Length: 328
Image 1 (tube, rainbow, N blue to C red):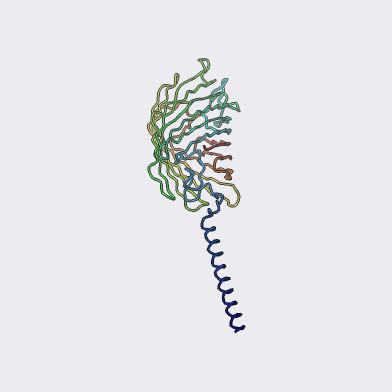
Image 2 (image 1 turned 90 degrees about the horizontal axis):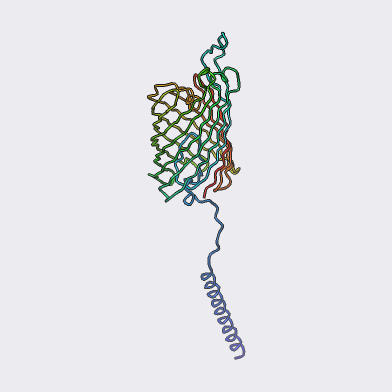
């Protein structure tokens, strides 16, 4: 009998222990179920939250390619370069200067602001000032010094956006005033001034992500230019341009490289206006390239440098640019 009571007591204790373990397990499971999951820190900026990102690749604007994204930003670009321009032989003091190349220094500063009204509609405006000064004898006589200031602006409309691709339509207008000193006009007044109007500039711009470390941008535009210079007359033309560029991220470094190419052709220009040739280029068909490097470690900031260069039969143009962009 004693053995039976002991066995019964042990059985009750075993059942009580099992029941207690079940109660503890249920209580622990309930507390875990009621607890909120841990909040993980975001590892982005996430592509869906950043207007200029597609499939993990965050894009940076080119100088020669139209921007395909709708965002709010402020961009400052400071530029400095040297142009070698082809000149005509010049008669000076009874002799002819045979050196047909002239060197000038060019500097420019621009400020651009954009505002994303919605995710698919934005507006933008830019102010620019530029100066070109001759640095050798032939160019000092024939080119002198020229400056321009003005602005442009317009609207951007997003047409297509998918995980890897975006297409945007843009329309801009612009105005600039030019002022210059042309010693070759002596003994007449060497002072010149005029205006350059961009009365319409429709464009299409696209971006495509091939991989999180590689993206492409491309654009096509047609700009109607009207030149009105006091001494040289009036001129109207269409500038047709296509550009493409690639951006490469050197992960894990916060560095992005860009390389781009632009081909443009100006149709309908009847006059060779010295002031605008110097500022805008003398040839109808032009080729431009761009190389850039940017800090890529912060979603709201771009800081870097780029060079643009143009090699034509008549001109050799190179400009260095320092760019700072902040995205709101």
